[in-house]
Amino acid sequence: MTRPTDTIIELRRVSKSFGPQRVLDDIDLRIERGRNTVIIGRSGVGKSVLLKHVVGLLHPDRGEVYFDGRRVDTLRERELVAVRRRISFVFQLNALFDSMSVAENVAFPLIETGDARLSRERVREIVQRRLQMVGLAGFGHKRPAQLSGGEKKRVALARALALEPPPAVILYDEPTAGLDPQRADSINKLIRLLQRELGVTGVIVTHDMHSAAEIGDRILMLWDGRFIADGDPAALRSSNDERVRRFVEGRAEPADLASLSA
Image 1 (cartoon, rainbow, N blue to C red):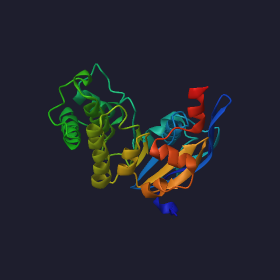
Image 2 (tube, rainbow, N blue to C red):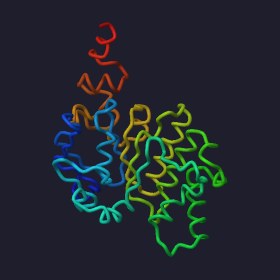
Image 3 (cartoon, rainbow, N blue to C red):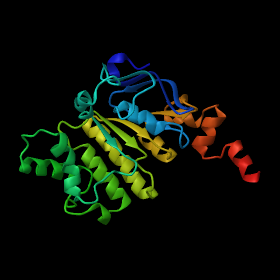
Image 4 (cartoon, rainbow, N blue to C red):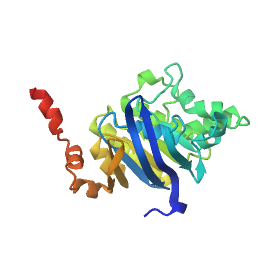
């Protein structure tokens, strides 16, 4: 059991609906500091919705969200600024600015929300250090359109790390989506590196079971608004729940197969 002093993120009985569809149904979750927690589940079950509650992009219909012991779902937008300095969000499609260079993309959070006293030279130093950390030294002059999918992911990670001190938490939304296995492996190893070298807590949403096993200290499966599995990668592979086994093994649900022959 995670002790309260080890918990950096907590959701207490969080529910969220969009129209008649209940996406999260009385969710309880504690994220342990310094570990990688992976959320898996079918498309549209609410994994990304859960992430957005953590960073205050969405608010629960019912329930409470805490970050480092402080309730955050009731904070006003300007009060969330200090929280968001400690939580970075790596979006599935990277959210890079096409009109900016790689260096300008990485520098963006420093300029927009960072310390106004930072000199241009200091910003350049930070950007170069972050690009070097993700293996993109010398890429600062390039534009996103000149990069591969894996390189764009690494730029997004460098930007997530730009503020100093680095974030306590990084939320990753499908970090290996659209990548070939070798580039996906480099992203997995980078996520582990950030955890090991910087002590970053990771919360990762993914469909990629290989990635989940590589980077996850703990894996939870979301189904119909609730968690139906919670354990390490080995525990999920040996689960007695047919829904969990089908997802982990990549086998279609009977209802999906029936619709093909209807």
